[in-house]
Length: 466
Image (cartoon, rainbow, N blue to C red; front, side, top):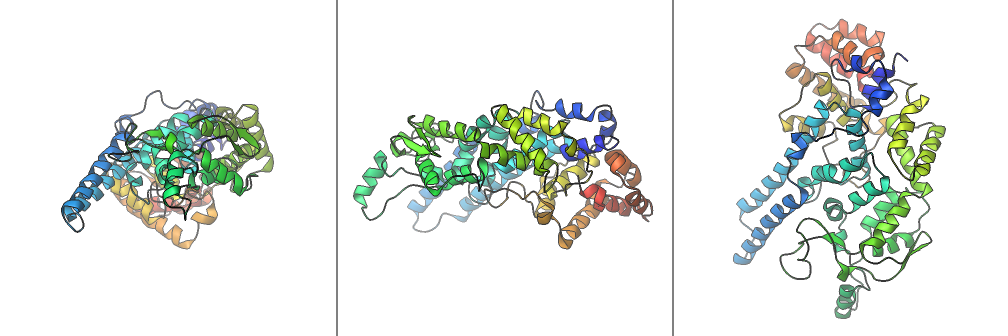
């Protein structure tokens, strides 16, 4: 029982802030349950950001300017236009990153915020291709954040229909072979069947719902890809057939949708238009393979790299019994004894380490590059997992001597910047509570300087794990 407050704050939350353990001592589980609805109102850091549609239109205007310059000159656009585009995209990326981490460090709803980050990584988009750096943070706020305690089907549909996901996996380019446009194109170019892109369909089945061993076939992937042809973005061109729709928002285009009934995982879908794809997603949300896949990921994230099988079974059963409602699954996770029996069972990712450090220091950063630089150094750049699979969630990926050295290096830097006013042993007691071991306390207390003691605290196994 004496470990429960620290486990609640550091494993379920984002790391304790000074004084936080005392607030939750009386009932750590109730403290977590109270956070499930999240804040009643988003703070200015998040709510003041422009919307995805506004950002995409802004970027499209710059691209149009580039095209016009290419047409007017014979060469490449002027270097200042290219630079302007890069600065614009980078500016949006830094603004969204700054908002995300300022809120994560300051929030009094850290469990809810961890759930946001968990699902954002589950439905990952990566800011490695244009224009993703400009919208990845907005995608998290618009599609993920409002749905993390609702029904998984609603979260699933919101993510798959968000312009960031459509763009990231190129579904706006997917054209049904028998669609109006597909037949017309194939008459002109008979040698090739143009248009169908399976990226989004494959990732939905493999990464977002059933899992790689979830029982689907390649035929299911191909058919599902046909079902979601036409899921696109409004105003994708200035003129012509892709100009309709509100620029930068989800748009269903019937002219590129594969017509007719389609069978996915043995179920025949006769709906028409966008409703057909939504029906498939709602059935996928209720599939037993989806329940087990999501239960396993949640248990891995919150309990252990190899979670107890009975816990996974319990979470999956709760998910199915509740019709894919997520709040009962979180409640079952909080109620499970195995979630509270092993302090320090999870090795922190760089993201967790940086956020928990700044929460411990009660320091909300105002320099975005400080956060971005730290996470770049440790190999977890914000919104850049590098693939739709998202960031790994195990010590095997984040451990190693070189990785630890980089953490120590950053710990020393941040201790010099913001940790000199704090006594390391007192801070260890305040944010680690009963999980601050005798061995770590002794090492920190013997440090020759305050900065050295703080660095030892941050590098200790007690702080590096949650």
